[in-house]
Image 1 (cartoon, helix red, strand yellow):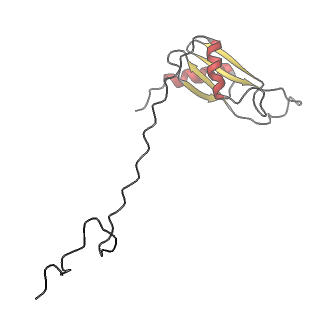
Image 2: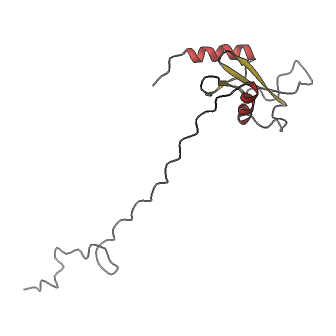
Image 3: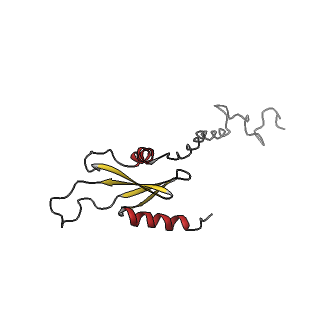
Length: 139
Protein backbone atom coordinates (compact mmCIF):
# COMPACT_ATOMS: atom_id res chain seq x y z
CA UNK A 1 0.00 0.00 0.00
CA UNK A 2 1.27 3.41 -0.82
CA UNK A 3 1.33 6.40 1.41
CA UNK A 4 -1.26 8.98 0.08
CA UNK A 5 0.97 11.88 1.23
CA UNK A 6 3.94 10.55 -0.74
CA UNK A 7 2.15 9.56 -3.94
CA UNK A 8 2.81 11.48 -7.18
CA UNK A 9 -0.09 9.85 -9.00
CA UNK A 10 -2.56 12.55 -10.17
CA UNK A 11 -0.48 15.30 -8.56
CA UNK A 12 1.23 17.92 -10.71
CA UNK A 13 2.87 20.03 -8.05
CA UNK A 14 1.63 23.34 -6.77
CA UNK A 15 -0.36 25.60 -9.03
CA UNK A 16 2.22 28.37 -8.94
CA UNK A 17 4.86 26.24 -10.63
CA UNK A 18 7.38 26.90 -7.89
CA UNK A 19 11.01 26.19 -8.66
CA UNK A 20 12.00 22.66 -7.82
CA UNK A 21 8.59 21.23 -8.64
CA UNK A 22 7.98 18.93 -11.57
CA UNK A 23 5.12 21.06 -12.86
CA UNK A 24 5.63 23.45 -15.76
CA UNK A 25 5.68 27.17 -14.99
CA UNK A 26 2.62 29.26 -15.62
CA UNK A 27 2.75 31.15 -18.92
CA UNK A 28 3.89 34.73 -18.75
CA UNK A 29 1.25 37.40 -18.91
CA UNK A 30 1.04 39.08 -22.35
CA UNK A 31 2.64 42.50 -22.63
CA UNK A 32 0.36 45.40 -21.99
CA UNK A 33 -0.73 47.36 -25.02
CA UNK A 34 0.25 51.02 -25.32
CA UNK A 35 -2.54 53.44 -24.57
CA UNK A 36 -4.51 54.52 -27.63
CA UNK A 37 -3.37 57.66 -29.41
CA UNK A 38 -5.50 60.74 -28.87
CA UNK A 39 -7.67 61.67 -31.84
CA UNK A 40 -6.09 64.12 -34.29
CA UNK A 41 -7.10 67.74 -33.87
CA UNK A 42 -9.93 68.91 -36.11
CA UNK A 43 -8.87 70.65 -39.32
CA UNK A 44 -8.41 74.39 -39.12
CA UNK A 45 -10.80 76.32 -41.35
CA UNK A 46 -8.88 79.16 -43.02
CA UNK A 47 -10.25 82.63 -42.51
CA UNK A 48 -8.65 84.14 -45.64
CA UNK A 49 -6.02 83.48 -48.32
CA UNK A 50 -3.10 84.43 -46.05
CA UNK A 51 -4.31 82.06 -43.35
CA UNK A 52 -4.71 79.28 -45.96
CA UNK A 53 -1.14 79.89 -47.12
CA UNK A 54 0.08 79.62 -43.52
CA UNK A 55 -1.73 76.28 -43.13
CA UNK A 56 -0.44 75.12 -46.51
CA UNK A 57 3.21 75.75 -45.60
CA UNK A 58 3.11 72.75 -43.28
CA UNK A 59 2.56 70.46 -46.30
CA UNK A 60 5.57 71.60 -48.35
CA UNK A 61 9.33 71.55 -47.76
CA UNK A 62 10.65 74.87 -46.47
CA UNK A 63 10.82 77.59 -49.11
CA UNK A 64 14.38 77.94 -50.35
CA UNK A 65 15.51 74.51 -49.10
CA UNK A 66 17.55 72.33 -51.51
CA UNK A 67 15.17 71.02 -54.18
CA UNK A 68 12.39 72.88 -52.38
CA UNK A 69 10.20 75.61 -53.79
CA UNK A 70 11.38 79.20 -54.10
CA UNK A 71 7.91 80.41 -53.19
CA UNK A 72 4.39 79.25 -52.38
CA UNK A 73 1.30 80.72 -53.96
CA UNK A 74 -2.36 80.67 -53.04
CA UNK A 75 -5.20 80.71 -55.56
CA UNK A 76 -8.57 81.40 -53.97
CA UNK A 77 -11.67 80.02 -55.66
CA UNK A 78 -15.33 79.57 -54.73
CA UNK A 79 -15.00 76.58 -52.32
CA UNK A 80 -11.35 76.49 -51.38
CA UNK A 81 -7.79 77.67 -51.54
CA UNK A 82 -5.30 76.03 -53.91
CA UNK A 83 -1.74 76.13 -52.52
CA UNK A 84 1.00 75.44 -55.04
CA UNK A 85 4.76 75.78 -55.19
CA UNK A 86 6.86 77.98 -57.44
CA UNK A 87 10.20 76.67 -58.65
CA UNK A 88 13.08 78.60 -60.23
CA UNK A 89 13.10 78.86 -64.02
CA UNK A 90 15.33 76.44 -65.92
CA UNK A 91 18.36 77.53 -67.89
CA UNK A 92 16.91 75.74 -70.92
CA UNK A 93 13.16 76.39 -71.20
CA UNK A 94 12.78 73.36 -73.50
CA UNK A 95 14.23 70.90 -70.97
CA UNK A 96 11.98 69.00 -68.56
CA UNK A 97 12.00 70.07 -64.91
CA UNK A 98 14.78 68.47 -62.80
CA UNK A 99 12.30 66.80 -60.44
CA UNK A 100 8.87 66.51 -62.08
CA UNK A 101 5.91 65.64 -59.97
CA UNK A 102 4.97 66.91 -56.57
CA UNK A 103 1.52 67.95 -55.59
CA UNK A 104 -0.72 70.86 -54.89
CA UNK A 105 -3.11 71.04 -51.99
CA UNK A 106 -6.57 72.46 -51.65
CA UNK A 107 -7.89 73.59 -48.29
CA UNK A 108 -11.68 73.60 -48.11
CA UNK A 109 -13.36 76.82 -47.08
CA UNK A 110 -16.23 74.84 -45.55
CA UNK A 111 -14.42 72.48 -43.19
CA UNK A 112 -10.64 72.95 -43.55
CA UNK A 113 -10.16 69.50 -45.11
CA UNK A 114 -6.85 69.23 -46.98
CA UNK A 115 -6.90 67.46 -50.35
CA UNK A 116 -3.76 66.59 -52.30
CA UNK A 117 -3.93 67.06 -56.07
CA UNK A 118 -1.45 66.46 -58.90
CA UNK A 119 0.87 69.31 -59.75
CA UNK A 120 -1.47 70.85 -62.33
CA UNK A 121 -1.72 74.55 -63.21
CA UNK A 122 -4.31 76.37 -61.07
CA UNK A 123 -7.39 76.19 -63.33
CA UNK A 124 -7.14 72.45 -64.19
CA UNK A 125 -6.41 71.72 -60.51
CA UNK A 126 -9.54 73.62 -59.44
CA UNK A 127 -11.61 71.75 -62.07
CA UNK A 128 -10.28 68.42 -60.75
CA UNK A 129 -11.09 69.43 -57.17
CA UNK A 130 -14.68 70.29 -58.17
CA UNK A 131 -15.05 66.88 -59.83
CA UNK A 132 -13.66 65.11 -56.75
CA UNK A 133 -16.04 66.96 -54.42
CA UNK A 134 -19.04 66.01 -56.57
CA UNK A 135 -18.34 62.27 -56.27
CA UNK A 136 -20.55 60.45 -53.81
CA UNK A 137 -18.54 59.35 -50.81
CA UNK A 138 -18.06 55.63 -50.23
CA UNK A 139 -18.59 54.11 -46.79
